[in-house]
Amino acid sequence: MLVSIDDAEVRVQVRDNGTGGGSLPRGGHGLIGMRERAGLLGGTLTAGPREGGGFEVAAILPVRDRP
Image (cartoon, rainbow, N blue to C red; front, side, top):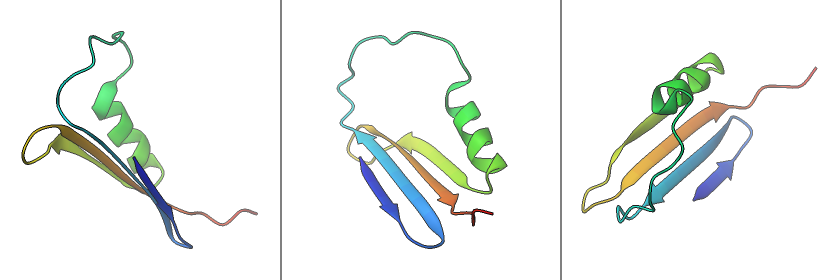
């Protein structure tokens, strides 16, 4: 997992190697829900298979000034 922060944005990148870790509980809205939430904050979320195997999820979220 990589996380970087600067004055304008927060970037999060999560990768796996594709070997799987067993089944996870079902529920929620998965990648679609994550993408929608990122969009509501003015950011983006991408997800998909990695070249050579595995999967990657990457989000870029803007940093907002606090009142």
